[in-house]
Length: 214
Ligand SMILES: Nc1ncnc2c1ncn2[C@@H]1O[C@H](COP(=O)(O)OP(=O)(O)OP(=O)(O)O)[C@@H](O)[C@H]1O
Ligand SMILES: [Mg+2]
Image (cartoon, rainbow, N blue to C red; front, side, top):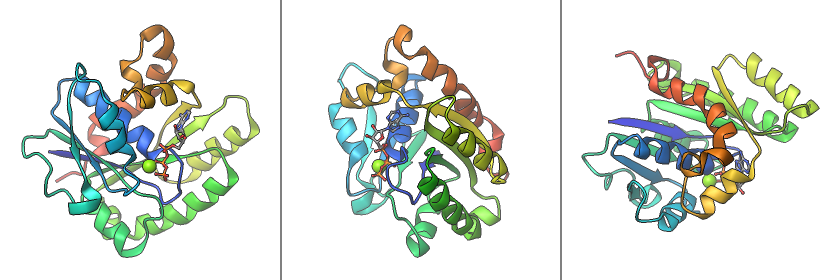
């Protein structure tokens, strides 16, 4: 069973958006997927409640209440949405549940500052330090040809953490979320630019680079 967590202590950077899209991507690939929400805001569970019945099913796990105990035994992949402001013991406990961690970062000075502190803390967590969990960053909500995107790109490149994808700021994400869908479930003519941007993130998730060597 694979555990993919979306994590950043900074609020509003796109954790739930990435988690719902990763879950729906794998569900459409035919995997048995569970989506575990550690955030009492329940964004992912709300998204699942919106999900149409004719789409590949994704199991809901209210992890903020009772952890992963109720996760379906037969799941191939558990996608885990983490809450903002996870630090200290809470962070160490969260990281225990994942082998793969995706960290979205927004093009904003505040977010880059917060991410520097967060990644410093994350790298000190034993499981990360010993490479038993692999981490990578994703630039989210980027707008091409903006100075702040150039700054973010440079910041993530220098961070000494794999920087695997940049996703644009697009209404498709808002549109898909409202309908309980992922961007992979939107029509191709609308969503192909986003599909292209997800390609390096998906190939990282499918490769050994995102999984600890045993
Ligand atoms: N690539 C994107 N393009 C457009 N809007 C986006 C994108 N990613 C996220 N958003 C929007 O940004 C807002 C914050 O995203 P989201 O809720 O996924 O962040 P979060 O990190 O889970 O927040 P929190 O820390 O509160 O849990 C939402 O309104 C979401 O629709
Ligand atoms: Mg969230």
